[in-house]
Image (tube, rainbow, N blue to C red):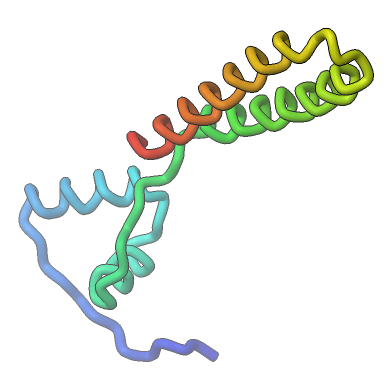
Length: 104
């Protein structure tokens, strides 16, 4: 049984309908979910691009590699300066990913 039993019919002009279609495409929501979210005052976010998820996976792999490098570096104290550089680059990469997510 449905939780929502009251149908609502809305008439739009061409411009409004075009904007609705564009927003649905950007968010990946159905018309019903989109309109319910608007009515309830929820913040509607655009769907992240598939490239974002691939990038997150790659950053995770890089993080795993850095951990392995850190273990080796801890075994060889003479490489501490190199590890500081690797850590700096990783932090910069993470910042770039976060910036990318905010601009999407």
